[in-house]
Image (cartoon, rainbow, N blue to C red; front, side, top):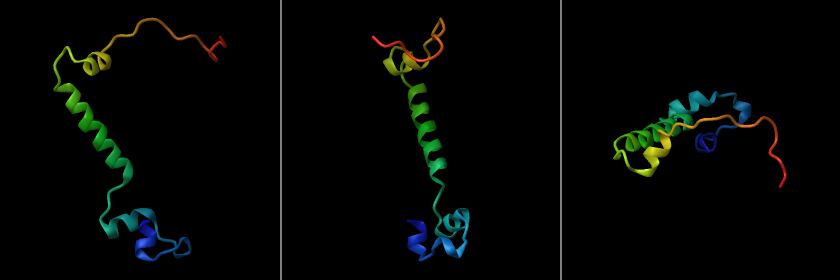
Length: 72
């Protein structure tokens, strides 16, 4: 979409980083990382008894079996 906005094609040989810098758009992986950190911060501020916080801090014991699951 960014190439289309600028009217560029792949034959113009412009790097994606350069196109994002020209338009002032942040990389999608950076935005995803920000969203995950924001969610993690919200979970950390929750009460100790909240289900999401308990699941995040759960201590799982034992080991998973190796290989493919058995058909039942």
